[in-house]
Each structure stands twice: as C-alpha cells, then as structure tokens.
Image (cartoon, rainbow, N blue to C red; front, top):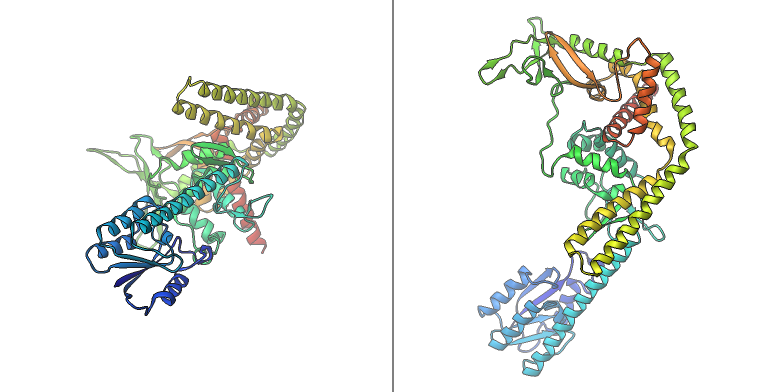
Length: 528
C-alpha cells in the first residue's frame, strides 16, 4: 500500500518543540520504512499550527490522496494531522469514502473500522479541546499580567524582558537613544526618515541582535510603530481597554498626543525636506505663494543663492524681486536681535523664575488634593457605569466607549498627580529665558539645520515683500519694547508657567532642548 509520510511542528523555532521534524521523521522511518506492505511514495514536512484549517502542505497531500496517488498516511500521532474540526472531519470523510484506506502512527494503533474511526474522532476532539483550553489559559494569563501593569510579550525597542518582580526594564543601550528620537519627533521639524538616519548614523541605533534576526537599522514602518505605540507613555492596551503600565515611560501622555498630531493621519506621506535652509517656511507678501531658493553661478564660477517667489498662479505672474541669501539672513538676525534679552533682563528673569518657584512650592498641597479628588470622582463614575451595565440600562457598545473615556482620564490624572511638582512648570520658562539671549549667537554660528530650527522656534508667518522679511514673534517670544520691558517679561514668564502643558510649550521646549544638545556636542567636539 502506498503511503505519504507527514511530519508537522507548530513553529519554525526548534527550541520550543518537544519533537522536531527530524525526530518525528526518524522515529516514523525506524518503525515503518521497509516494513512489509508499506511503500512511502512521498514525504511532507510542515512548520505550521494545526489549530485552524488552511495548512497548504497538508491540503496538497490530501488533494493527492483524493486523486488516488496514495492510499494512506504515516504520522507520529493523530494530533500531527489535525487539531481542528475541519481537518479532522475531512480525514474521517476520506476514510468513509474509501479514498483514504489506512493511517499509521508511531505512537498510536489505528484500525480502519467503525470503532477505530470513532476512537480517532475522540483523539481529534481531545486534541482540539487541548488547544482551546490552552488558548483560554494563555488569554487569562495575558489579562492577569496586563491588569498587574506588565506587557505580556516582547517589549518594543528601548526595553528588555527581565525576571520578576520587574519583568520589563529599560534597555541600557537603546532606551536613551529612543528617548532622544521622541524629543526630535516632538519638535515637529524632522521627518521619520531623518529621525531614523540621525539615530542610526549619529547615535548608532540598531535593533537587538537575536538568533536569526536583529542588528539592523530601523525601517520606516518600525518608526511609525514606535511613535504610535502608547507603551512609551506608560500605557498598555488590551481588547479595547487601556491599563496603566508599571514600566518606566519615555514620554508623557501630552507628549504622545503631540507626536500623533505631528505625524498626521495614518499613511500620510512624510514631507520632503528641502535642500535650502528656509524653503517651505516663507510666503510671498504680494501673492501669498511659497518662496523658493535658487542657486546662480556667475561667469567667474562663484555660486550665489537667491530666494524668490515661485512666481505663477494660473496666468498671473508675481513681480516680487529676488533676495540674496546673505541679505535674507541679515533680516532674520535683525528679528532675532529684536527678541533677544539683554544680560540685565536675562539675569532678572532667571532670578524671578527661582523666586516664583519657591513661592508656588508652598501651595503645592492644594493642587495635589484637587487631583486626588478628581481621581476619586473618576473611580466613582467608573463604578456607577458598571452598575448601569449590570442593570442593562446601557448597551455593551455604550459601556465600552464610556469606560475607555474614563480609563484615559484616570491615567491622565494619575500622571499629573505623579508629576505634580510645581518646579516642573518653570522648566519651560528657564529654557525660554536661556534661549532668548543665545538664539542670535547660535544662529550666526550654526549650520543650515540649526538656523532653520531657530527660525521655526521663534518666528511665525514670515513674509517676503520688496526685499524685506517681516516676521511675527511666536509664543512665548516677543519683540521687546523700550518701555516697561521687565513688566512684559514678567507677564511672559507667567504665561509660560500656566501653559507649560500646552502642545506649543511642549514643542518649544523640545526644540530648544535639541539645540542645546547640538551646541553641547559641538563644544565637546571642539574641546576634543
């Protein structure tokens, strides 16, 4: 009788298999190869789970049996052939119709009779029950682990699995690099590809090396996965619910939300970074079209860069003149000089921030009490929501939607309570004060990326008209007047303190921090 030899394991990982393909094949061949009345006409090896139907190699083998190319199957155990009702039913049906005449197993004796098929179906059912029960146990374990605040599987880039009581810890090599990547994303001035290239080329980021994979530069899809993963903000999500994680977060919830806004809608193409420093930032003051750059070469071989309007909108042609790059940068320097703090104002502002920090620290207790009260009210609302669902006064969909809102609010309140240090509210103000009297110096000494970033931080709505660049100061910067400058500065410091959690303040702080890092790195290189 002709037989097909079938060997199967659930995964490609030999370390997680009790009997691998090689051991199954050798045991079966030792038992049946050369036995009287047995002719093995083909061997099939498959690394795929039998929990669900759809195994291509198994299906091909049965198709050949239906065409009469073989009469039986040799396998290690019945559960190698089927762990689901569809595949098990197909085998029994082939036995009923006579297209499949025999089954031989190294660990089980089968007889092609009504009693033998009945026992075979019981084994298939037990195999299915084992898989289903194992699945439920795994799901229960996953839910329990998530509810305790721990991710149940491999953590993303920047984290490592460890032993209890802290199953997930920061990766000492990659955690600080990925955190710096988030800081770049917060600025809103870098594309994902640029962030990836900086992390790979300047900071040496590679994925963790494993047995068969790893050690590579992150792909763009992996970058999207990082910046859309709430795990980095300390959150765990399972079956539509959000849970607070106990691992160390890289960013806050507010920073996570800001990065999502910077990324835009899912699948949106990343903007292409221009070669010139200021293209895409300036508009024509006459027609409103974008201002672009162009390089000219004179007859002596000297290169010059000019900025000008893109000129055309339909049949209309803009007549705004070209502006050479040196003159444009002089206009930007004049704007930066107008927002620069004098040394006297700089020292006064820093002292003011320190005094206000000490004053506000004394009133921190009331703020923490208010947050704690809000948390208690949130817990009461969640409890009432459960009661409404138990009494069938709301639908499952309404319950899931409202619970998600309350869970998210609870996580935000818990984060604010854990970070309720009034001194944090003054950190953006300190950054602003320090940056305000350094921006001009850094602009004059910086490269194109630094200059562009400084203009994006400080300027708003730049317009080029009649070879003059007009720039509005972006919050929290302003052009300082000669009258009452200290009063105005006091107002700005207070505005920053009260709005330090606003997206624009978070973005400004990230941009300034990026410039500080670049400046320190350059100073270190010069010192070396």
